[in-house]
Length: 435
Image 1 (cartoon, one colour):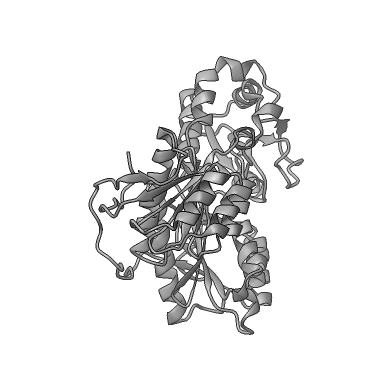
Image 2 (image 1 turned 135 degrees about the vertical axis):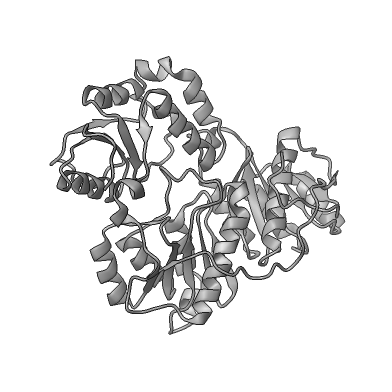
């Protein structure tokens, strides 16, 4: 454990075991802590430590609790769901810091939120430190943590998965993917790793083979805020991986955390699941060369016209799908207000549309009717069923990439459903995040 001060370490604690593990490691090394627990999130027993339970809206009280304890270094750890803003109970501190709070709400995806959070606490005089720097033993080392090791085929899947996360990192999509036998099965987006694993557990993959195969791959995105959003795995991850019919878990060595390591390894041994820390290695060749930064032209097909914000979302989704297509099959994505809520490598649009409809950002999405748009990748067919699924999921509209032809009946169905329909003409697509 490293620390530049003898003063208490502040822990802003969300859910999971990591806040407690960090507190125990700090105190075992002779230090002390001050915990501020987010009321509805914390699920570990932290009663042995100085602790204050506060809601996310109590910004003034959170700052006061840390300052009163003499905290200078702060670790922010544990999961926290984005709150419903209509249910927050703010204190004076929220209103005193209203400009920063507004930036937080409208910062877009997870990366933007995390950067705003770090800057906020740094502006208040705290030094935000990484859990891995504070307690190095939490980080996953290189190589196998289990007696079961990945096969050469698993290693190929791991490198492909790592490349996919890196390629999609510019679009602020999640830290995890699932790869099996060279095929991309699932991509984490706003739903999180657990729900992604649950989807695969209910799929043909989990039901179709007696022998487990496939790997959950987790790694940081390029440019990710590493101090407060390191990928993490724990005992429950092993259980869900086993239920999904996968053979193992792979994380980037030194840049991911293992919570409750002893129990994690007990679970892995019982389920015959390998846990592996990989290093950057040879990436699989791309299916196509990187394309230019010229933006594709959008052609409206029906009577309903998208607005400027919706067209921006369409272009963001098209660029993400183009980046994915250089490595693996590219199906469709759903984008809302500059944030990719879900990306599906297959053509199961009904499931994609429904699961993204249930997601919310700060309690706002459900208040905004038809806030999301869907983008279909090149050569992905569109038909009346696709339009019906989009309408049922309350999407605003849909775009098809590659300049593919759209049947007149599909255009009429979109008009009847009040959905805009756009065709992205086959101009070169950028593999970079569009401005």
